[in-house]
Length: 488
Image 1 (cartoon, rainbow, N blue to C red):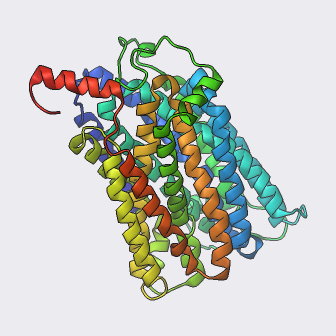
Image 2 (image 1 turned 120 degrees about the vertical axis):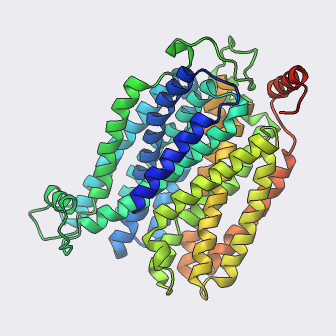
């Protein structure tokens, strides 16, 4: 049933993409742009499957990986992800998004293979290893290559989508993240369930997986499959990317397309590595966007990463539905959040990104407060609030990392700006991972309490950028309104 809902959602997103054409692009441009972003997007979604499979493996490994161990492994990985952008953001601005997504997919695939081998060796008793140390090392390598993914998709987007269309692309970006979360949690959990040695369910896929991952030693659950399978899928999409993706419309034989972002009028300028970083760290606006994303990173993974652990550990009656469908719920409501933020931005605030972020952050604060009040008394309220928080935070992330950073960074510096902003997301993720891993080991009540201030900080920071738009976008809007005599 879940896959049917996801496929219907994907069909609706594709239909909306073709319906939304405010700049009146030709039919072939719309089709060719779809051929560009769809495989690129699916690569990004399956990168998520190869990222959050750690969460699935933590639950499957049980006592072999404690909450504190998991918090340390995930925290070190996400901090590595955050600082990687100092290198690969400027690099992707030089080599292009197509090369970046290929590096990401192949590198993450190899890292996942080694994570699978490590899990196999530990569970079958072939090696006595410090699980935390080796998982931290290999997961950090995985996250380094993962960090190429977001900047690559946004780099390509920056050349193919006008600023006035990017709110909707931000929604598409949020949708791809949501699909990735579904693949990671629901497909990942399904893989773990199917390869259990005591699973006697007779279906062709389960039988096939148990045959492929069977071991000759003492019977153990082949948890390593949750790493190997995403690795294969990522290579499959990398092959399609190699043939399908064009970095710019010009490479696909279209005329030059001015997207009216911060690079308009500067496309002939070449930035050095230092100049690219300077565009972020000397811009008060970019710093505010990055700090908003730090708060969203704390909340995003503070919910997505820990609700599953909380529900399975506390086993509060009524949480079963959310645990069984966690990936699907995050997927559906993540799509809603991405489109909610993007459509509000483009249609009600003339592509300003700050206002919807203010509303979404205020909504998150209210939902986190409800979680704190009903944490142990109502599984329905806690589960519903967690899903709605995830909806809102995907909206924020899509607008900030996926859209605002590209708007104000411009096409020439998109990867650097969006990468460092996205790095702050994962810096926040690292902070919450280590902090909540420690706090939840003492009492789960600290979990929502820790998250609440970050929603308020994000809201007040977003108020600071309420009116901001790139100068080229303001000029474009003024010219169009002067020409047609109506507000757009």
